Amino acid sequence: MKKILIVNPKGGCGKTTIAANLASYYALWDVPVALIDYDPQHSSLEWLDQRPADLNQIMAVNGAKGRVNFNLDVERIVIDAPARTTDIQTQRLFEKADVVLVPVLPSAIDIRAIGHFVGQLMLGGMLKTARIGLVANRVKENTIVFHNLERFLKTLDIPLVTHLRDSQNYIRASEGGFGIFEMSPYQVDKDIEQWRSLIEWIEEK
Ligand SMILES: Nc1ncnc2c1ncn2[C@@H]1O[C@H](COP(=O)(O)OP(=O)(O)O)[C@@H](O)[C@H]1O
Ligand SMILES: [Mg+2]
Image 1 (cartoon, helix red, strand yellow):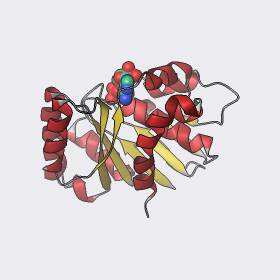
Image 2: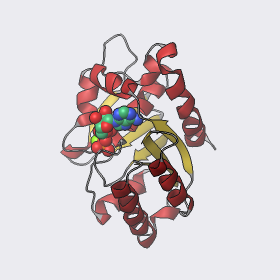
Image 3: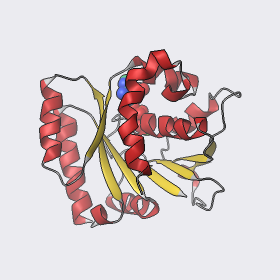
């Protein structure tokens, strides 16, 4: 069983979007999967509430409700972290994870914030506990701010695994309780292409 944590204390960077779409990817391919939502706002659980009954199931776990039993009968556990996690909370979440994804937006504020967060991870010795990868999210290619983000991320000791474009498909999927993988292929081929390297990296032995 593999546990994949999506974390970044900065709100709005795409944690829930990536967690939900990753869970739906596994569901589509018949991999038993659970989605643990640690966010008190329950965005992932609300997404799951909308999920059409004819799609493959994703087990919902409310992590904000107290101690979570990780002995679930599934092959993949996707963990959606809350915003504003403290050092201790981050450490606890990292202890559970085999793979950690850190979404980051191309914006000056988010670039500064990711610098602080990575510093926090280094000081806490957390960079050694799991495989960590960055995901640039809501990217508009050929913009200065994206190039700035790429340049900054290269200075970190963490790989930039993929970038995901800013796309209405994610908004549509989040409203309907499904993932982009469960939409018409012609609509989402560009997005799915960007996920390929991410999935390969997560599933790397
Ligand atoms: N790649 C993307 N393209 C377009 N909208 C996105 C993308 N990623 C996230 N969003 C939107 O941005 C908002 C914040 O994303 P969310 O996943 O909720 O962030 P977090 O969980 O980190 O707070 C949501 O409205 C979501 O639909
Ligand atoms: Mg969220």
